[in-house]
Length: 193
Image (cartoon, rainbow, N blue to C red; front, top):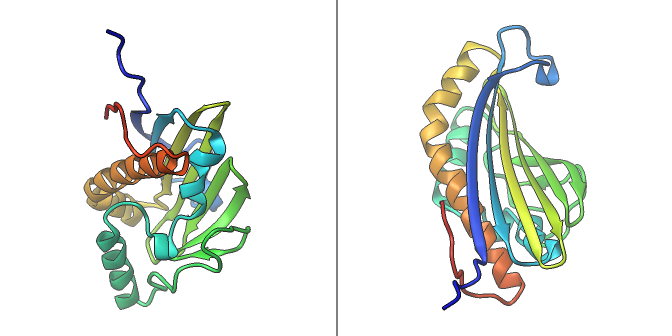
């Protein structure tokens, strides 16, 4: 009996490394941390990218939306922007758009989305989604990058890392499931994490 075809597989890698060049000129004591994960789907790249294109606003962040709302509330308490009111358009993205607490820095349709965190924090954070593939096979890479900017940013990263670990893993898994649903595949036949 043949094994069922895997519709979704995950590979997670997390690297923490000193910055060779400093993001946004943060200085000599700045460290850059990266959390990068991939998921492979048996769907066309456009289907894999659809949930990424719709992220935020009414669609939410695909996992633990209550944590995003809590972080937004805490940001408002310290004078930040909070989660704002969603996004300009639920299906389309343009460079410069605001998506909740993020700003669209770069966007390539069906391929790449780079978001910059606008909440108050001591460093500089980005969240990037990249989709590669051809035909009926796609890989989504989700990369969170945080330039600490020094001691306080490093402390922020280490204190928030356990939540980010759970949040980013769940978010990518659910983005993958949403990509399968966009392709008309409602069931995940196999996965590993």
